[in-house]
Length: 327
Length: 305
Image 1 (cartoon, rainbow over the protein chains, first blue to last red):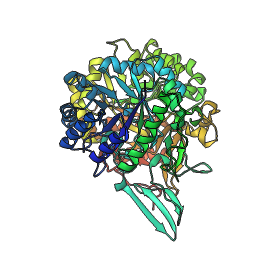
Image 2 (tube, rainbow over the protein chains, first blue to last red):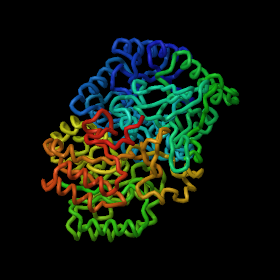
Image 3 (cartoon, each protein chain N blue to C red):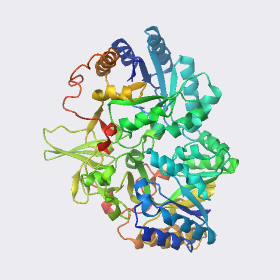
Image 4 (cartoon, rainbow over the protein chains, first blue to last red):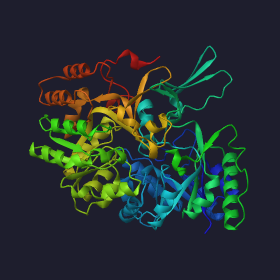
């Protein structure tokens, strides 16, 4: 079976662009703190979501709605409403991470398909099967801590579909298990749907040396005319012992395009592209390339060479944890 | 309110591990959670000491629980995790994987690395047999208050991170190994020289985080002294004290004195600061703008430029 390309959409325009470019599936979120890309100007209101789902369905594509932050105590109703509205909007599935919300959805919206978000960091077949038994999940988005051979081992031991990230931003920490951002800035992926938020970034020019600070902590420093990467915490530059450098990860992004055949062999059902904050042109370009790759693979043809070089120009790429040596 | 000693997060020699837990037998704490939380490669060095430590602590009248790993991926780790329930003490799950192996109806406790953010999650865990939950440290006081009420209704004891470096992240990658140009599989136990983690500083030489193998901690030590009254009022049942290599017995006594009114918050903070004069405090997740904030007077080197 051809692997499903699961593509991000931060706006209705990006959704339409992704569908037209050949995405089998689009994932998106409501414009509030219920999703893990809660950025200003991004995401869908209820009417936009309903129209987006209708557009995707009319073109034979599916829509998944991410409700993958952890509901705030006392305010669970906001997240419950998001699940109800996802079903009303005609979503093909919801992507959930929180145990309480999974239980709520399974209980009150049993007909709405449930995927386990990467934010749940379910990293082995036993816990995946446990989530399936407890909450009836049909698919798991695997955390970015696993090698290709470990993914194959998981697929051999579960009936649950697996979805893996192949392109875009790369979490270095186990997702949903990281409070670095809230420690430094007060805003976290789990509670607020943001990591290293732009509202807490400052650039400071000191005689031609540009410092990038997050929450007041200087984690990048470049000379004039050098490109200044965005100060994401886990890709920052730090000192420890005698070493100064990118102690956690270099400012790289994930590109697993050349691993597509191995991922298919490993039994992966769906390939996920990160980047709901990206432009529709970017999204369309990435989708076209990945769709061409899985179609070529399905037809027994060689993969198109050098795809995505334009999009990744100037940006270092990694295959992350898929390569065991990354650890 | 009770005092719980959390599992040691660092890689200590077997002898240091043993003497630390022997010391806890006479410490003024109610509960001890032991075992390996961070990295399964450390376990063989002290695994055979665990049964005796459990026996010693039980004999001293402590409640004892055994922690699971925080991130379970390898076959070997799954096997270890599946065997936790056979050690004769309660299991503290720090990854839902551990719950998958417990027969339904088994009583268990939940550690701070399981995401418990709301009433629905507490209710589900309580229905599965959870009797005690230590909340994730990033929760604000308002959430703690709401969840303490929920927990009380369900007969669950709620615990809050009371003292020690904060467990901020866990990864598949070992940063200690990376720092030494090694991979995790060939780490040669690069973390063993840092019994409280390795300090990570910003480019302004400002203390910020601490490296502990696959785990990343805060540089600052949480001290809940100034939050104690609010936590008690909310109905929080226990404070968790996280082991440190130096002066931990003094830390336990100071929090006991805080709990029984023998010392006030200022006195406790001052006394803890004397154990290690380089220590920096935080309690910002509960009432500050961000986790790193501190209700007391901060040392100038923490404030940055």
